[in-house]
Length: 296
Image (cartoon, rainbow, N blue to C red; front, side, top):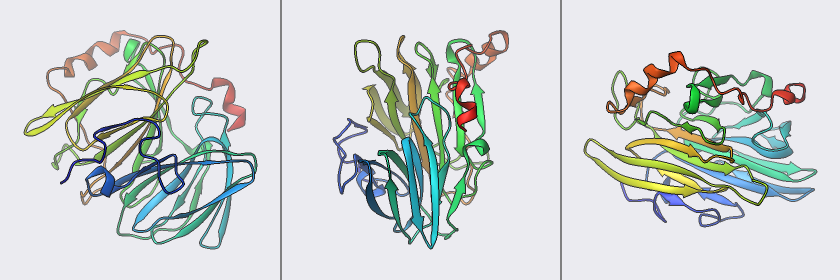
């Protein structure tokens, strides 16, 4: 495996290409399966998207769009921004060409995974997205499990969104999924970040990735909106939302296993933290977008 082009922390704009704000492919990441693109469209603009040997989603980050593929035409209601509420999305099969059009403009994430099976184009409504409140106290966060194995059928792709209130830690305790076993999956992972603005401008957060047994990596990154951290292996976490700035990240995962599953192992040095949650309430700021239920 070669290393990722540009290192494991890709700053916003540094991995743009081919008309995308962000383009991470298995080749550019130096691994075998996971990919992610982010597409911005002006009002009335269209873009052609070829999936190649990967299955792909069209996931609105902001705005709405229409997706045409394989004779199907799907309208995505989308959302104002990633903190508003979960969104609907469309699944695109491998070996397909889609046209994405946005009447009013927007930004759209395209999580992808190299795969073998060719499935059908499908629309998943926002109301079908499972929303989980995970952790407690200052480890409270919200997980939108929109493309988790138990929530949506795909060949290899696993994807979810995590929203962390300012001052909280998520991806915590640190965990890994870099070995194939009965209790752990081998998955490459992409973290794509957005940070809520504060009254004086853009915010920031932090991401940690460190070595697991026999697998060297050392990342401590200040992340801002549009940044990406690539996790080929290693313990990862915490993801830190600094006080005053809510943190969003999109996780995209895929790997070589025969079973599409998200099985993780906590760093044994920090597993005890989970035992403290039973006596702590979940952060009352969760879930995000309470007032957006009608929009879903």
